[in-house]
Image 1: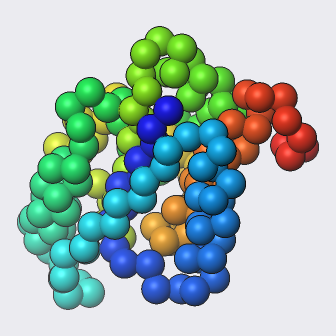
Image 2: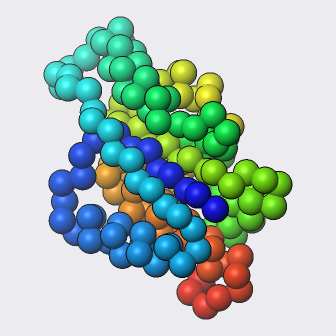
Length: 159
């Protein structure tokens, strides 16, 4: 299975980089994983609604350019479907079973994802109704993908 995580914004925090690197290393036994980091669009703190749409649109264009045509796209969005770890594991397993060997998870920038990216997504996933920094979501996502593989293989880790 090939898993890509397309994410907006540069990861600066050393502790997050280390955590992500550890899970990517662990995941290499189960799947090919690729993290694609795209630059965020520079914008002032206070934006009008129109400016927000423009920023998300520019970031969205960069995201869409990196998504393979045959990929199953899962957008991370607060309004997405919430799943348990077991449900996410089952979802990934079902995608692999039915020939979807390329899964792309998309994490937007601080303003979220453009309408165009959401339309391209095959489904949307929410980890919580709470808002998390998009940099932290990378770590949470790679951990949950790793946990999913462990669950599907019946290996110890998940409790």
